[in-house]
Length: 113
Length: 113
Image (tube, rainbow over all chains, first blue to last red; front, side, top):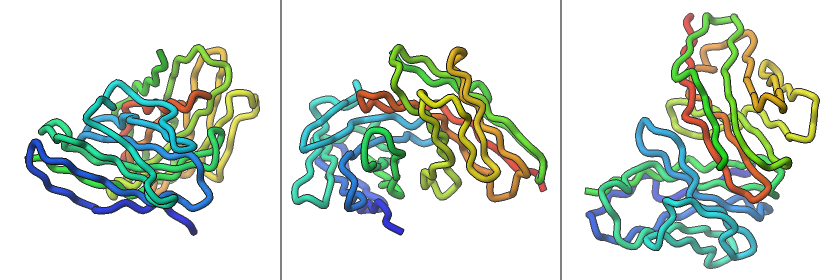
């Protein structure tokens, strides 16, 4: 069964460094998403992406964040200058269309020290 | 603003019994979708069930069913014949036509053998 994959599974970085989290959505899906979940807290929507454009973003998704689909298969989330409070689990998801369910990847645990 | 509320932070159920998890939401849109996701300790997000707002019939998926009350903006999840593998965090999720996705805070379900 097709699945969303994410790399790395765990990333440790120092405050102020740039990180890129990678996702490979399911191949026939057209809509892509990033979420984060700070340990023990709720899942927060970051951004949705369709047709090479951001379709929605939350207040969390400020200028420090960017997304890209560089090659037709990968979907990346970049954090330009990480802060301690960026430490969280980051989930990528994809869906066929806006009406269908989202399939989630296993997540990348980001630790900022 | 769209919101999702889950008033039960924790619930427990005896194995083989039935449990209902509550969810209420608020949105001004008429076209939206509701989902229940399960997050076991592995932290993988797994779709349990979905409901389209335009459908009056309550969704059912094997032992899982919903009680969708559109006027009351209520979307509860019923798990019948609970199994040990049902123990997880359950998230109620609202997805709007503008592709913004809101997660509720979650309900942690324990299953007692």
